[in-house]
Amino acid sequence: MAISFVPLLLLLLISLLSLSTARHRHGNLSPPPPRFTVSSPPPPPPPPRPTVSLPPPPGRSTVSLPPPPPPRSTPLPYTSPPQPESKLSSMVHSFLGKIVLGIMATGLVYLLFLACRRFLVDLFQYVTAINIIFPV
Image 1 (tube, helix red, strand yellow):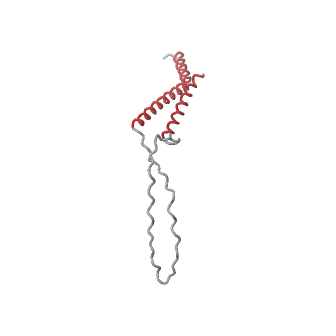
Image 2 (cartoon, one colour):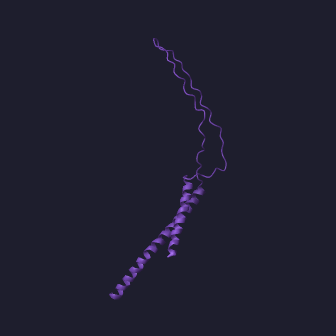
Image 3 (spheres, helix red, strand yellow):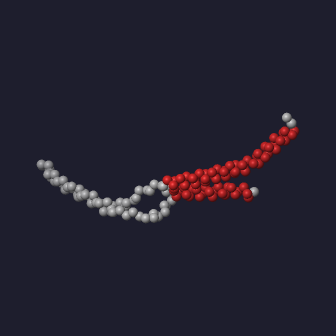
């Protein structure tokens, strides 16, 4: 009876490993630290806004507006664009994925066989018993 749990445990282990590698590849987990960092100078500050002074319309009093808010003092951090996966790495991942799927499909077929084996044995005995009792 313990032998029937071996394929199930093997399938569970393989599916967990493939799930963890898939999460890592698709960015759900934190990526490994980069091998080197590219430091670029921060972007130049934007040019100051030109001030336009209009004469007040005749007959109206002048209203002084508050000065515009100062430009943002801390620029946004520079993030490098994501590096595309190399063709060889993509082919290796695809090949390994197909192997894992093949192993999982084989294990699933084996589990279905184990589940249906007793039914198939009973069906075979029933058919042979009918053939013995009522020969054709």
